[in-house]
Image 1: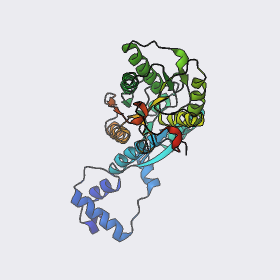
Image 2 (image 1 turned 45 degrees about the vertical axis):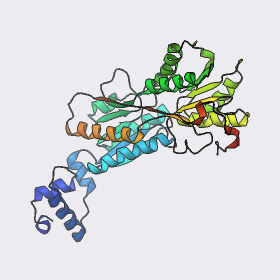
Image 3 (image 1 turned 90 degrees about the vertical axis):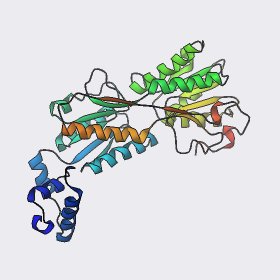
Length: 337
């Protein structure tokens, strides 16, 4: 191989093992020689020498959520450029399922883990004891010294709620996630802070905790519609619950934004296509994954460096669902399809 590519055996080894510090011209010659000779690296033997695979495990809570689709793409792009491949683990917000995946991660000796924890009880000590590099995304584990990538959850929720206040709504409800989950608590705190800043009373009867799924959003919205007096606006703390809440409004003949202003957290690819177009708090989802991948690459290269927390900005995308302008109602558009 080295003779064919006219390079040293050490250069061949670095290219085969995915090291980035190889001259691009030499690396291209090695890859051409590999193709011409039909060479395929022996992954089993290589991993035995390394005591690690070239795999990253990405452990997320809901593979059906579009938020994670763009995030995982950002991770994968960094992994590929760094010589790693990605395996995806879906926990369904289930701590037991999550624990099984973490045990599998240890057994398979993956090179690193990027995880969106299912809850505050997620225990990463076993990974730390085995010196498996870890980056936490989307949710913060209090008290842990682990590389973490977050967004401005509280600030984004505050922007969303303040916008509803400025649009003239008075009884603004909130559907947030499960109690104790970092993102749910942070977004609820932002909602409450905006109400307080505007001189509005924080009413716990207008807050519902759900499961970050569309069914949970639907059920929570059904309960809020039974409140007397009924809320006239709604902030929802994630995209799938927003879908469920909108479906409930359609089923009950509630028009948006005339009868109910709506702002959701997480932008959706179709948010600007429905009528009325949906106001959302947009997260830099691809950049979240990209940043997590970069931190994991650095952690693998320098295992003992200090932990880093990166917080990325959120942005309010104001559209028709929160502005009380006359126009088509939610009921005239198949939002729930």
